[in-house]
Image 1: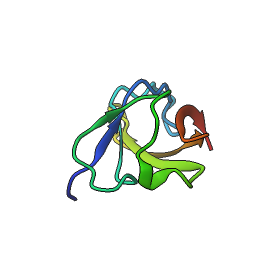
Image 2: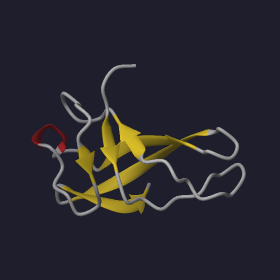
Image 3: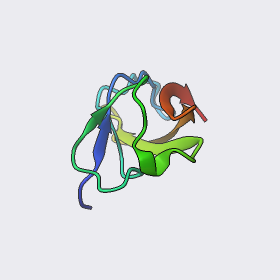
Length: 83
C-alpha cells in the first residue's frame, strides 16, 4: 500500500475479457510518489532518467483483473507505448 502516482491518457484493453480499461493507471516507480498525475509526453522525474520503462497497473472494471503494463520511456519522456 502507500502512495502512488497516476498515469493518465493511456488506452489499453483487458487481456482477459477484452474490455477497455477505464481506470487511470498507477505506478510506484517514481521516488516519493504523492498522487501526482503524469501523461504521455511528460518528462519523467529525475530519479527515473536511466530507465527504459516504468511499471504501471490498473484494474479492469468488468472482470476485476489487475492489469500490469510496462510503459516505455524514451529520452526521459513517458510514452504511450507498451513493453
